[in-house]
Image (cartoon, rainbow, N blue to C red; front, side, top):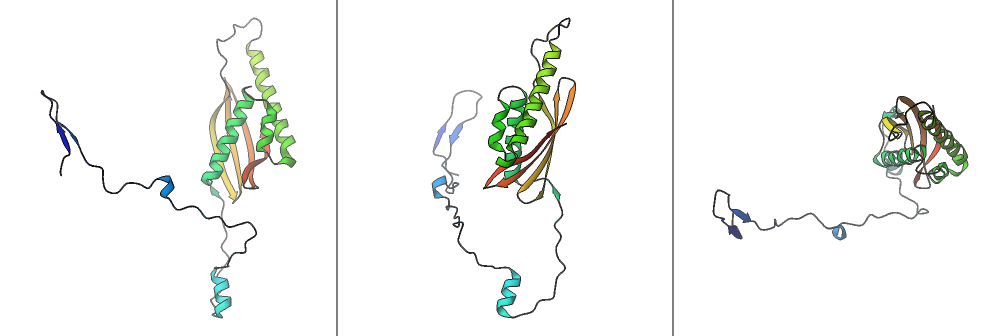
Length: 195
């Protein structure tokens, strides 16, 4: 291997050598192929095996219908949407945001119910904090925020994700359950329940 520059200091330290850049580097963002998206009203060809057999006239033996089972877990987009929604819920419960901010992450028809559950949760946390500062008890220096203990989610069908979250504040534990659906290419909450 050819070294471009070698620096040999005096003493027990090893020599530092600079090497040339490898000939193959990862592509830059502007060198990547653009993602091609079809317009919403464009018709697509049906390339399924059934359509091809109908066109060619070749009969294929009938196969039993494939049943899709519910898989625990979810797509990367669904996981990101769930984390974003849980983070927003925690900010509402901890008092950093008003419950009305949940409206923008909910389907318009269900937004009132989602916001109402956010109000109930914020009131519950406020009551616990007020009880912790009751007269006769020494107030803690800093009240702990509501935190996530565990998050479980699954995608029962493409475009819908359901999650259950275990929340904790001091010695209290709650559960929060919600459902999000893909609505106009963005994930929106349809149901929120605090237990």
